[in-house]
Length: 97
Image (cartoon, rainbow, N blue to C red; front, side, top):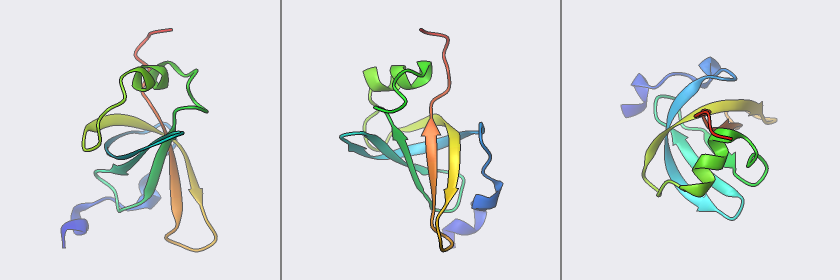
């Protein structure tokens, strides 16, 4: 199986930089697939996080669907039943205001 080489979601950590492929644009932000991990819902709320330097940059230059970018794990939320989790992503800071 192709997913055998993917890392388990239990290894996701807050602050970790991950490679993610943009899967959709939404009115509030974007969704992504984490390339090296088991499939999981992942999103970046550009409206809520727009004051963060890296997110501000992404909002100005919204990556096209299918693009792979570096993002940062902001929070991992477990739902009531496994494997339902959601990864709240943010962007690396690039030193801009």
